[in-house]
Image (cartoon, rainbow, N blue to C red; front, side, top):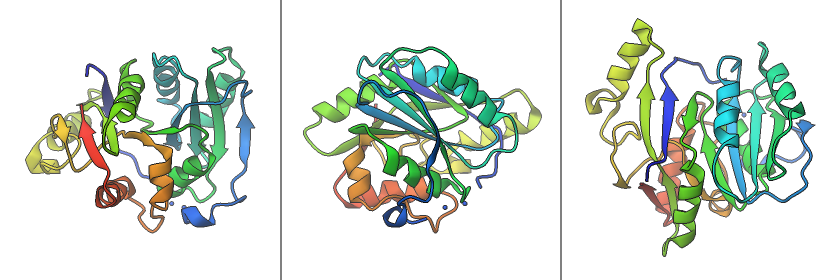
Length: 242
């Protein structure tokens, strides 16, 4: 597949969550764009102080070439910069009827809570977990959804990931470490090639698979997506990079 994800290496600290089973009405949406059509695909992104990245992220998701309706859920960990103002401005801008954006609050601030809020609120049959510091080739979602749909087994798909530097010395060194198996292991999504794998950085799969697995473990402030990958495998879901 030509679709790839491009991930910035800027260091960040992930703020902390409520177990998926306990997420009821504690985090109401603060902004909801009109929803004239029912989304088939839900793209979930945890954000916190992303004023430098949010416009590129939204553009990348809105320009996905899948024709079916898509919603982007931005779960904000109570940003203190202009991220929320930027998102509200984006909500006011015109876009195709089959592209929707919603801004949701994550008062707990930690990433696993954001994932579970997105999982609770997602309308689409297909769930895409994306990163705030990443951009995606226009065919990423379409190709992954087509592969999940056509797979004879239960599967989650993702594309090859390129880790890019912003040009600073720190970022250059970080890229060198993260893209080397010695620095991040041969099982890392940054070093794996195509085929069946242990981890997917930006997975696309059926929403029901994650809900049936019980959602993300909110005791894990980091690497909750890796733990979910292992749980999915144990439940018979194959992880594939294409």
